[in-house]
Length: 399
Image 1: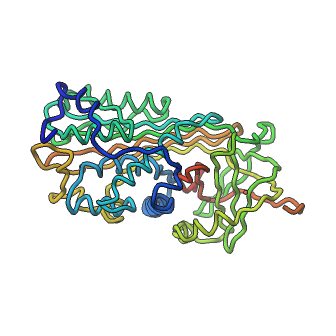
Image 2: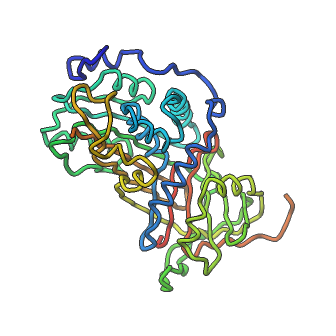
Image 3: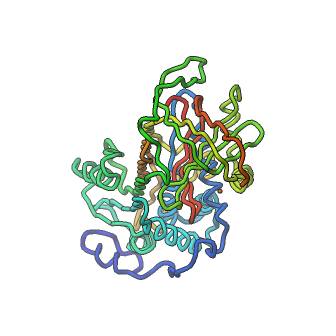
């Protein structure tokens, strides 16, 4: 295809192109590189974003990983080297990354017991030349819907936000307020999850109780109660519980530090080494759970975190996206993410959108029940069991 431009005229041709990696029907564990790679990315991103103890934080590492993986396929030179390294790969193993992401996408979208929907899209400026090979790869591997739009028309921002609204079932209505004249492409990933607990909490067991804030103050919040057998871990300065959703393919982990533990120091313990040590340590125990109902909405710009994680060049004047832009230099302008999570008696509803905006430079022994009372700040993780993807990871200081 050479350097032909991506436009309305050749959009259909680009989508039909079979260039790119060959996708093989393989299990996630057989994709050549360990699952630890995306888990390491997830925990690093959480540590960078969860530094502020004054508010609730909720990121979707999976959504960011998907959107950045698509974007990295358009990069070259040192920009690609940095992005691949942050994603846990190398320029020479990008085909392995793409195959792995394709398989994960298929697995996550094939849930039957819960509602799980993952979507990708590319909105590209009709007046800017893009490599059709890049668009075709994203469509083939990431099932990205490709749309050519006039980025000079304010309605394009509305169309992007309408896509986000639709894909997240109204939970994230807007990811962009405007586009600058230099911004020419938006790569989008959305995640929507709605799952019932395997064992629901009874609404009449919910009561107003005291939750202790980091400041020392307290507030009354609705706390759900249930006695059940669940995965439980007690380790050093914390205890944790694992609550399954219907079908037991997705789990919610609640990590509760001991009262008086420095919360910032506690969050810093979320490393790959600790994560891999903690998860096999959960054992089935009878637990009296007291968990706050919580609704969390979070918005962030991920550029600072991603630069600190090791990919500054993608944002600078030296950015190289030669496999994306056909005839002019370009780079990442900003990486936006919005998330939503509602934890209640029935289950959990969660959504996320990540937008990478491109610019031109241009789970026994019978024992007494364990009390697990979440009455102070905690960390929450929503994890898919089969793929082991960390779909959402956050810290709750004020439910």
